[in-house]
Image 1 (cartoon, one colour):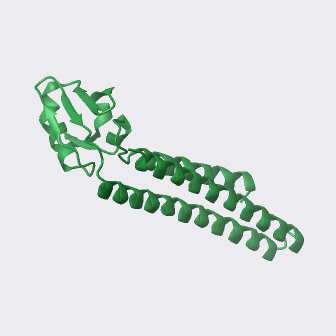
Image 2 (cartoon, helix red, strand yellow):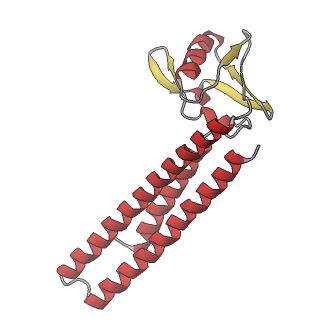
Image 3 (cartoon, rainbow, N blue to C red):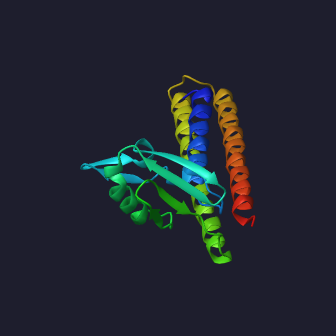
Length: 182
């Protein structure tokens, strides 16, 4: 496994972690909150964003305007069943989600959730490191690399791992600050 492959895989993990963070509610309206909401649309699980226009008219409201008004009931039901903790208001034309201010208790829960997501990202990065180091050791064992080359590559992989782990820590710190800001 080449160092560039390791970096690419770790970068993908960072991006995945960032996407996960975007789905955590922070007290401000953000259409990314609905990214994971799947709607049972004529028997098929469909992402909400492909069934409706999602906008944020102000800092505390998300407006969902379905392309097909017949799907409003399913969209409303999917939002209620999702883990975002918001109650949809359906006026027949569009669905509105009012984002209430977060309580201190809820903020703490969200910080814990962010920490859990960050830890999952770090585990994924460590798994990439483990696979890369195993690959290097295998090459050394097969005499494709010398001991020195193997050691240098392993050190490089560890440096890259530390760098990407630090990036996840930075993302987590920023998200915690975002959640904690009233």
